[in-house]
Length: 162
Ligand code: SF4
Ligand code: SF4
Image (cartoon, rainbow, N blue to C red; front, side, top):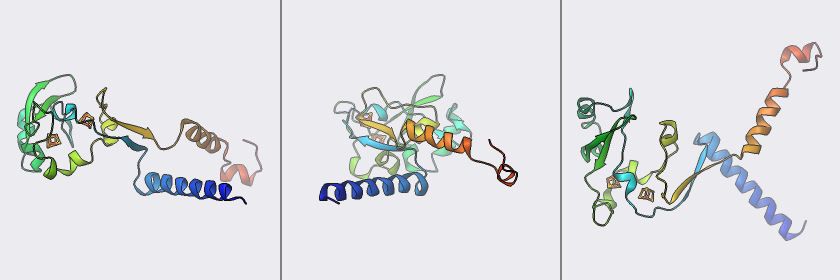
């Protein structure tokens, strides 16, 4: 085996381990790629989701304020077909920067997470991040095909072709 082949094999193994860790251990479907451009857009069009769905009424939001400090930073700026729209009061409107950047809550540090898609949301058009599928379309297709051709115990017992 040449050293190039050896390096390729190691890289392939590391990639497989990474995939395994993300999909099986963390239960993720996407990698977060890119970097924040500091545009501040994600801090002034925020929907809040709780157990009953996206917050629609201010009275429901009031109850949440005691649950996490993040909610105390938000104020309602509008409403659309998804729900109430909030803006974070820590966003400096001139610089588009977070005024509490060093002590910002974990939810802001981890943004964007793939749960956004589960809520029916999307990243802003110019966001510097991308959520990249961990498994390519071809890999998912191949798995589905394999599953579809798997023989059941019944098929194996009676030697049936599926
Ligand atoms: S705390 Fe900072 S990072 Fe988090 S939403 Fe508010 S302005 Fe944005
Ligand atoms: S929208 Fe994206 S690029 Fe802009 S501040 Fe938020 S995370 Fe950063």
